[in-house]
Length: 499
Ligand code: BES
Ligand code: ZN
Ligand code: ZN
Image (cartoon, rainbow, N blue to C red):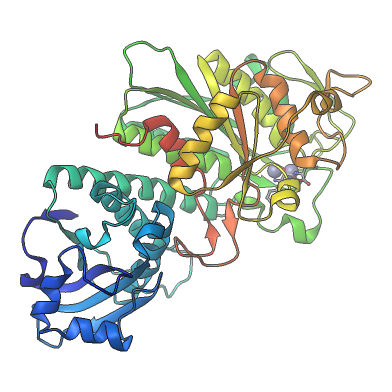
């Protein structure tokens, strides 16, 4: 796919060439002067007349009309050098990638050194470019009869004056991160009649096999034996058997110092007997967005093979209704022995996560991140572009926050106090209740999970608002976003997995 070249980019035959333009009128950077010379000074003129703009995110397509061996140039405006950050670069490149996709070309090239500016090193640029490109060109194939076949890009040439090996690793890492995101998006976009708990288990098994990691799939009987009463209660009204999916990546000699990733895998959430209204139920195929994020991250981790240990636990079931389904007022017993009064069967995510957290701890997780499309409340609190976080440990939260800053996936911490813990313990007849009322709704979801985490350092990420989007954006189409794949993977592999 990638070909890294130290040659002169403007002397090679190319269909389409992507160039970054920094807004600094005095001179061209990254070897662009060479191109201006090849264009006999016309590049300068085109910038002056505004036909090519260095304004942030502005895309200009120029045909060389035989003046160079390159057919078309795509210039992407990067704005001012000192304002350029990873995130701004990612979005600008995402925008240009959509243009490249529209051109329906099978190959293109990038002049990497034109993207080195401000805080952006060559490696950073290489990683960001490839990650943004693959994310921005994602499309969910869908099920229409008359789909046009996609043009598959099979060759990307990266021109650079930098060390080829270093750039190659960075480009490949970005590609792996972006692929993890896209695979998670496809899982989330797939409707629940086609993505059942068993299909999610099969997907995980295939991934484990492909990348050589360990998998444990618990079926209903074993789940019963282990006493996962909270998980089983949610599955009670379903014709689909539940699966507890466990993936283990061992990068250290000893199975110690283990990061646990736990993802809510509700393949469809009707709300149960606390049934959702007809508008609220549409889109509930995406209630496994947390599971998809964890699967996407595990794929990245398994491919990059850092020297870390990671266990992923995914409770997979739908939340359906039949005569056996659990009901409001039921009291259930979770795997760790705590009893729960069910006040709302639509607060099912925290129930399945309770047992998954307990199981992750049994597998040696000594710090935990759970990811879940948990509450509508987080959307009311933070909007559709921020993931809500809750934690019991400042240091661990800071690590997750740092990882999210690197990936540009915004997270925001909500308070979590003794009062909140008391509210989830307020049942008169059981240890906990699963729905203490609408006030601080998003916090209550996290606080309930916290009762099972106990003292293990933990971060809860509520992605109800961020897992999907109604609008197309720089890094992808509308639909599933694959949010938190990159942050979880970054947390596990560190900034430069190739070192
Ligand atoms: N899956 C939903 C949360 C959700 C809402 C995700 C909107 C994506 C978009 C979750 O299981 C749920 O229904 N939560 C309830 C909790 C309440 C009953 C305590 C909610 O948010 O209303
Ligand atoms: Zn629900
Ligand atoms: Zn749900």
